[in-house]
Image 1: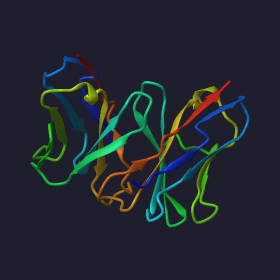
Image 2: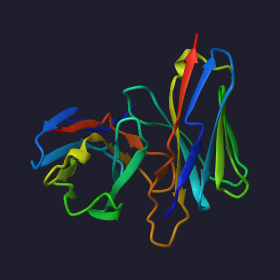
Image 3: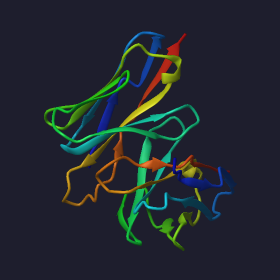
Image 4: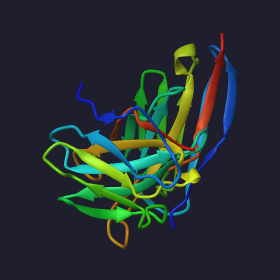
Amino acid sequence: GQQVMQIPQYQHVQEGEDFTTYCNSSTTLSNIQWYKQRPGGHPVFLIQLVKSGEVKKQKRLTFQFGEAKKNSSLHITATQTTDVGTYFCAGQPIAGGTSYGKLTFGQGTILTVHP
Amino acid sequence: EPEVTQTPSHQVTQMGQEVILRCVPISNHLYFYWYRQILGQKVEFLVSFYNNEISEKSEIFDDQFSVERPDGSNFTLKIRSTKLEDSAMYFCASSEWVRRGGYTFGSGTRLTVV
């Protein structure tokens, strides 16, 4: 079945440093989504990428979807303490086949930011 | 901002007992999901539900699990005979479309089986 791998598992940064997490799917995706989970919280939708090579920005966050639609990255510029949490990518398979479109999550990257 | 509401927030149950976890999805959403997250691990898909029937389920979702939409607003997950390994945070989610936009997750029910 579809697997989504995410690295690194942990990232500790000083406030103001940049942060990047990488996501790789074993199969070509219909789209990839990114979620943030604060400690003790629930996943909160950040963004969806659909097109091959797509790049989207949300303030200090930059999301990329690979040309082959199998990998993705999230880059945060100049981290702040409010960025603390676990960042998950989640891939959705191409329509058809046996999958109706379930979202498969990566293992997540736990980001800690030291002030 | 519309929310997905889950109750209870925490449930402690004895092994072998039945539990029902409840969810109220966002009212104009058509697709409903249950996910679970064992402490410190990734979010795992359990089941998706559309048009009053299961559209997809994972290997975890065996005969001990069932879902229901008993009325126009609630969406429930039942575990018939709980095991210790069922201890996890259970998240309900809903979405307006299956492939456009993201899921809105509820704040979860922490299930502890003792």
